[in-house]
Length: 164
Ligand SMILES: [Zn+2]
Image (cartoon, rainbow, N blue to C red; front, side, top):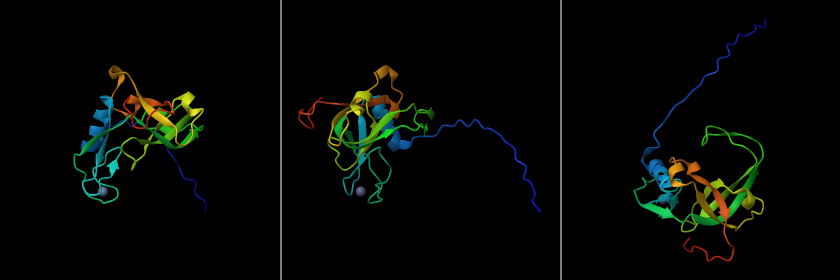
C-alpha cells in the first residue's frame, strides 16, 4: 500500500558567528591592515595561504612564522563565472559575470591565492599575466576577503617582484 508522506515546509533564518581562530584570524587582521599574510611550516618551509594551524603536507603544527607576501603576483589559471551561486564571503548571491583567478604571489611560489579580477583585466586575462591586489580604502575594510576589491593587471615589462 502506497502511503503518502506528509511534509512540513519550514524556512529557517539561521544566523551565526564563529571564531576565525588564531591563524585565520591573523590573516583577516592582516587584510584589514592592507597586508596579505601567510604562515610557514617549521618543517618543510611551505607557505599556507590562507594560514592554517597544520601543514597540509607534513601534518605538523604551524608556528607563528608569519610572512607578509607581496600584493603582486602572476595568474596561473582563471575561470569566467557566469552562473550565479551563493558566496559565503558576502552572505548571498554574487552578481555575475566575474572572473576568478588563481594567483601565485611574489615570494610564495609554493601556494596559490584565489581572488576576483578587475573587469578590464578579466577581458584580457591570460596565464602569466602580472597582477596586483587592490584593497578597499582603510575606513571600508572589515577583516574579510572583501577587503581586497580585486586584482588588476600591472605593466608587463615591470620588473618581477619589484616594489609597488
Ligand atoms: Zn610542512
